[in-house]
Amino acid sequence: MITLYDFDGKAKGVPWNPNVWKTRYSLNYKGLPYKTVLIEYPDVEPTMKKINAPPTAKKADGSPLYTIPAIYDDSTGTAIADSILIAEYLDKTYPSTPRLIPQGTHALQGAFGDFFFSKMMPLLTLTLPDVPLMLLNPRSAEYFEKARSADFGVPTLEAFRVPPEAKDAAWDKVKDALGTLNALMKDGDTWVMGDAPSFADFVMGGLIGTVKSLYGKESEEWKRIMSWHGGRWQRLMVALEKYSASAVPTL
Ligand SMILES: N[C@@H](CCC(=O)N[C@@H](CS)C(=O)NCC(=O)O)C(=O)O
Image (cartoon, rainbow, N blue to C red; front, side):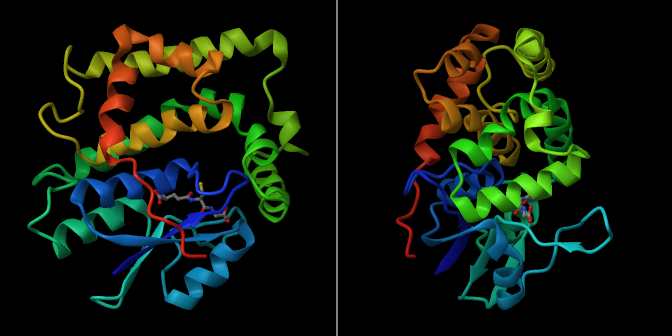
Protein backbone atom coordinates (compact mmCIF):
# COMPACT_ATOMS: atom_id res chain seq x y z
CA MET A 1 0.00 0.00 0.00
CA ILE A 2 1.16 3.54 -0.72
CA THR A 3 1.34 6.07 2.12
CA LEU A 4 0.86 9.73 1.22
CA TYR A 5 2.31 12.29 3.62
CA ASP A 6 0.14 15.39 3.89
CA PHE A 7 -0.20 18.33 6.28
CA ASP A 8 -2.62 18.34 9.15
CA GLY A 9 -4.68 21.49 9.54
CA LYS A 10 -7.42 23.17 11.52
CA ALA A 11 -10.21 21.63 9.45
CA LYS A 12 -9.94 17.91 10.17
CA GLY A 13 -9.96 15.75 7.09
CA VAL A 14 -10.02 18.70 4.69
CA PRO A 15 -6.82 18.71 2.64
CA TRP A 16 -5.55 22.18 1.77
CA ASN A 17 -1.92 22.12 0.63
CA PRO A 18 -1.53 22.91 -3.10
CA ASN A 19 1.63 20.85 -3.49
CA VAL A 20 0.12 17.79 -1.85
CA TRP A 21 -3.00 18.16 -4.00
CA LYS A 22 -0.85 17.45 -7.05
CA THR A 23 -0.04 14.01 -5.66
CA ARG A 24 -3.54 13.33 -4.33
CA TYR A 25 -4.98 14.04 -7.78
CA SER A 26 -2.24 11.86 -9.29
CA LEU A 27 -2.98 8.87 -7.06
CA ASN A 28 -6.73 9.20 -7.50
CA TYR A 29 -6.47 9.58 -11.28
CA LYS A 30 -4.47 6.37 -11.40
CA GLY A 31 -6.94 4.66 -9.08
CA LEU A 32 -4.15 3.48 -6.79
CA PRO A 33 -5.13 2.69 -3.20
CA TYR A 34 -3.29 4.69 -0.55
CA LYS A 35 -3.52 5.85 3.02
CA THR A 36 -2.75 9.33 4.27
CA VAL A 37 -0.53 10.27 7.19
CA LEU A 38 -0.96 13.82 8.43
CA ILE A 39 2.00 15.68 9.89
CA GLU A 40 2.85 19.19 11.03
CA TYR A 41 5.48 21.42 9.37
CA PRO A 42 8.21 20.90 12.02
CA ASP A 43 7.81 17.13 11.55
CA VAL A 44 8.47 17.11 7.78
CA GLU A 45 12.26 16.84 8.03
CA PRO A 46 12.42 14.14 10.75
CA THR A 47 9.65 12.14 9.05
CA MET A 48 11.34 12.30 5.63
CA LYS A 49 14.66 11.25 7.17
CA LYS A 50 12.92 8.34 8.89
CA ILE A 51 11.43 6.99 5.65
CA ASN A 52 14.54 7.86 3.62
CA ALA A 53 12.96 10.40 1.30
CA PRO A 54 15.66 12.76 0.02
CA PRO A 55 15.49 16.56 0.31
CA THR A 56 13.97 18.29 -2.72
CA ALA A 57 15.69 21.68 -2.54
CA LYS A 58 18.03 23.84 -0.52
CA LYS A 59 17.19 26.45 2.07
CA ALA A 60 18.59 29.98 1.67
CA ASP A 61 21.47 29.01 4.01
CA GLY A 62 22.39 26.08 1.76
CA SER A 63 21.10 23.36 4.10
CA PRO A 64 18.79 20.67 2.64
CA LEU A 65 15.06 21.33 2.47
CA TYR A 66 12.76 18.36 2.99
CA THR A 67 9.27 18.77 1.62
CA ILE A 68 5.96 17.00 1.19
CA PRO A 69 4.12 15.62 -0.71
CA ALA A 70 6.09 12.44 -0.29
CA ILE A 71 5.02 8.85 -0.66
CA TYR A 72 6.25 5.58 0.75
CA ASP A 73 5.36 2.56 -1.35
CA ASP A 74 5.76 -0.56 0.76
CA SER A 75 5.31 -2.85 -2.24
CA THR A 76 8.70 -1.66 -3.55
CA GLY A 77 10.23 -0.20 -0.36
CA THR A 78 10.56 3.18 -2.10
CA ALA A 79 10.25 6.64 -0.55
CA ILE A 80 9.97 9.65 -2.87
CA ALA A 81 9.45 13.35 -2.37
CA ASP A 82 8.66 16.02 -4.98
CA SER A 83 5.38 15.78 -6.80
CA ILE A 84 6.82 15.48 -10.31
CA LEU A 85 9.26 12.74 -9.26
CA ILE A 86 6.37 10.97 -7.56
CA ALA A 87 4.38 11.25 -10.81
CA GLU A 88 7.27 9.72 -12.77
CA TYR A 89 7.67 6.92 -10.24
CA LEU A 90 3.96 6.10 -10.36
CA ASP A 91 3.92 6.06 -14.18
CA LYS A 92 6.93 3.72 -14.20
CA THR A 93 5.86 1.43 -11.37
CA TYR A 94 2.20 1.15 -12.34
CA PRO A 95 2.34 1.13 -16.15
CA SER A 96 -1.19 -0.20 -16.63
CA THR A 97 -2.70 2.92 -14.98
CA PRO A 98 -3.36 6.18 -16.91
CA ARG A 99 -0.19 8.20 -17.42
CA LEU A 100 0.41 11.44 -15.52
CA ILE A 101 3.23 12.47 -17.83
CA PRO A 102 2.33 11.33 -21.33
CA GLN A 103 5.18 9.80 -23.31
CA GLY A 104 7.54 12.46 -24.60
CA THR A 105 6.18 15.33 -22.52
CA HIS A 106 8.53 15.15 -19.54
CA ALA A 107 10.27 18.49 -20.17
CA LEU A 108 7.05 20.22 -21.18
CA GLN A 109 5.18 19.04 -18.08
CA GLY A 110 8.03 20.19 -15.82
CA ALA A 111 8.32 23.54 -17.57
CA PHE A 112 4.57 24.08 -17.41
CA GLY A 113 4.51 23.52 -13.63
CA ASP A 114 7.39 25.94 -13.03
CA PHE A 115 5.87 28.53 -15.37
CA PHE A 116 2.49 28.27 -13.70
CA PHE A 117 3.87 28.64 -10.17
CA SER A 118 6.02 31.63 -11.16
CA LYS A 119 3.09 33.35 -12.91
CA MET A 120 0.93 32.87 -9.82
CA MET A 121 3.18 34.87 -7.47
CA PRO A 122 0.54 37.65 -7.21
CA LEU A 123 -1.83 35.10 -5.68
CA LEU A 124 0.75 34.34 -3.01
CA THR A 125 0.98 37.98 -1.98
CA LEU A 126 -2.79 37.91 -1.44
CA THR A 127 -3.09 34.58 0.31
CA LEU A 128 0.14 33.55 2.06
CA PRO A 129 -0.34 35.53 5.30
CA ASP A 130 -3.77 33.91 5.70
CA VAL A 131 -2.38 30.35 5.60
CA PRO A 132 -1.10 30.21 9.23
CA LEU A 133 -4.07 32.25 10.46
CA MET A 134 -6.80 30.22 8.79
CA LEU A 135 -5.49 26.78 7.95
CA LEU A 136 -2.67 25.67 10.25
CA ASN A 137 -2.49 24.29 13.76
CA PRO A 138 -0.36 26.34 16.20
CA ARG A 139 2.92 24.34 15.82
CA SER A 140 2.79 24.55 12.05
CA ALA A 141 1.63 28.18 12.10
CA GLU A 142 4.66 29.21 14.15
CA TYR A 143 7.04 27.31 11.83
CA PHE A 144 5.37 28.63 8.66
CA GLU A 145 5.44 32.22 9.87
CA LYS A 146 9.18 32.02 10.56
CA ALA A 147 10.18 30.00 7.49
CA ARG A 148 8.17 31.95 4.91
CA SER A 149 9.12 35.36 6.36
CA ALA A 150 12.76 34.30 5.92
CA ASP A 151 12.06 33.02 2.37
CA PHE A 152 10.57 36.36 1.33
CA GLY A 153 12.93 38.54 3.41
CA VAL A 154 10.13 40.18 5.40
CA PRO A 155 10.07 40.67 9.21
CA THR A 156 6.64 39.04 9.53
CA LEU A 157 4.23 37.48 7.04
CA GLU A 158 1.81 40.33 7.74
CA ALA A 159 4.41 42.65 6.15
CA PHE A 160 4.03 40.58 2.95
CA ARG A 161 0.26 41.16 2.84
CA VAL A 162 -1.08 43.36 0.05
CA PRO A 163 -2.52 46.53 1.64
CA PRO A 164 -6.32 46.91 1.25
CA GLU A 165 -5.99 49.74 -1.28
CA ALA A 166 -3.79 47.56 -3.54
CA LYS A 167 -5.94 44.43 -3.36
CA ASP A 168 -7.96 45.03 -6.51
CA ALA A 169 -4.79 45.63 -8.51
CA ALA A 170 -3.28 42.42 -7.10
CA TRP A 171 -6.39 40.44 -8.09
CA ASP A 172 -6.12 41.97 -11.57
CA LYS A 173 -2.59 40.55 -11.75
CA VAL A 174 -3.87 37.10 -10.78
CA LYS A 175 -6.47 37.42 -13.53
CA ASP A 176 -3.78 38.46 -16.04
CA ALA A 177 -1.63 35.49 -15.01
CA LEU A 178 -4.49 33.05 -15.50
CA GLY A 179 -5.33 34.88 -18.73
CA THR A 180 -1.88 33.99 -20.05
CA LEU A 181 -2.55 30.34 -19.29
CA ASN A 182 -6.01 30.60 -20.79
CA ALA A 183 -4.54 31.97 -24.00
CA LEU A 184 -2.10 29.06 -24.18
CA MET A 185 -4.90 26.54 -24.01
CA LYS A 186 -7.26 25.72 -26.84
CA ASP A 187 -10.77 27.17 -26.53
CA GLY A 188 -13.16 24.55 -25.26
CA ASP A 189 -10.44 22.25 -23.90
CA THR A 190 -10.65 21.39 -20.23
CA TRP A 191 -7.22 19.76 -19.99
CA VAL A 192 -3.79 21.14 -20.87
CA MET A 193 -3.10 18.11 -23.08
CA GLY A 194 -6.50 18.48 -24.74
CA ASP A 195 -8.09 15.06 -24.46
CA ALA A 196 -7.08 13.75 -21.02
CA PRO A 197 -5.90 15.02 -17.65
CA SER A 198 -2.18 15.09 -16.94
CA PHE A 199 0.13 16.29 -14.21
CA ALA A 200 -0.07 19.89 -15.52
CA ASP A 201 -3.81 20.03 -14.72
CA PHE A 202 -3.14 18.80 -11.21
CA VAL A 203 -0.59 21.58 -10.71
CA MET A 204 -3.20 24.17 -11.70
CA GLY A 205 -6.05 22.62 -9.72
CA GLY A 206 -3.90 22.36 -6.60
CA LEU A 207 -2.94 26.00 -6.55
CA ILE A 208 -6.25 27.48 -7.69
CA GLY A 209 -8.02 25.31 -5.10
CA THR A 210 -6.12 27.03 -2.29
CA VAL A 211 -8.46 29.99 -2.67
CA LYS A 212 -11.42 27.73 -1.90
CA SER A 213 -9.57 26.11 1.04
CA LEU A 214 -8.87 29.53 2.51
CA TYR A 215 -12.05 31.49 1.89
CA GLY A 216 -14.71 28.89 1.05
CA LYS A 217 -16.74 28.14 -2.06
CA GLU A 218 -19.22 30.92 -1.32
CA SER A 219 -16.49 33.56 -0.99
CA GLU A 220 -16.20 36.51 -3.32
CA GLU A 221 -12.60 35.47 -4.02
CA TRP A 222 -13.57 31.98 -5.21
CA LYS A 223 -16.59 33.14 -7.21
CA ARG A 224 -14.41 35.75 -8.88
CA ILE A 225 -11.90 33.18 -10.17
CA MET A 226 -14.65 30.81 -11.21
CA SER A 227 -16.18 33.54 -13.39
CA TRP A 228 -12.98 34.41 -15.27
CA HIS A 229 -12.07 33.45 -18.84
CA GLY A 230 -15.43 32.11 -19.85
CA GLY A 231 -15.60 29.80 -16.84
CA ARG A 232 -12.44 27.91 -17.85
CA TRP A 233 -11.25 27.50 -14.23
CA GLN A 234 -14.66 26.47 -13.04
CA ARG A 235 -14.77 23.78 -15.74
CA LEU A 236 -11.34 22.59 -14.66
CA MET A 237 -12.24 22.45 -10.95
CA VAL A 238 -15.53 20.66 -11.67
CA ALA A 239 -13.74 18.12 -13.89
CA LEU A 240 -11.13 17.56 -11.17
CA GLU A 241 -13.77 16.73 -8.56
CA LYS A 242 -13.72 13.18 -9.85
CA TYR A 243 -10.13 12.88 -8.60
CA SER A 244 -10.55 14.80 -5.37
CA ALA A 245 -11.41 12.12 -2.83
CA SER A 246 -9.10 12.17 0.15
CA ALA A 247 -8.20 8.88 1.79
CA VAL A 248 -9.21 8.64 5.43
CA PRO A 249 -6.26 9.80 7.55
CA THR A 250 -4.76 7.07 9.66
CA LEU A 251 -3.24 9.30 12.34
N1 LIG B 1 8.60 20.92 -5.68
C1 LIG B 1 7.97 20.32 -4.53
C2 LIG B 1 7.52 21.40 -3.59
C3 LIG B 1 6.92 20.86 -2.32
C4 LIG B 1 6.90 21.91 -1.22
O1 LIG B 1 7.41 23.02 -1.39
N2 LIG B 1 6.30 21.55 -0.08
C5 LIG B 1 6.27 22.46 1.05
C6 LIG B 1 4.85 22.68 1.52
S1 LIG B 1 3.98 23.74 0.44
C7 LIG B 1 7.00 21.84 2.24
O2 LIG B 1 6.87 20.66 2.50
N3 LIG B 1 7.77 22.65 2.98
C8 LIG B 1 8.50 22.20 4.13
C9 LIG B 1 9.13 23.36 4.84
O3 LIG B 1 8.83 24.50 4.49
O4 LIG B 1 9.90 23.09 5.75
C10 LIG B 1 6.81 19.44 -4.99
O5 LIG B 1 6.24 19.71 -6.06
O6 LIG B 1 6.51 18.45 -4.33
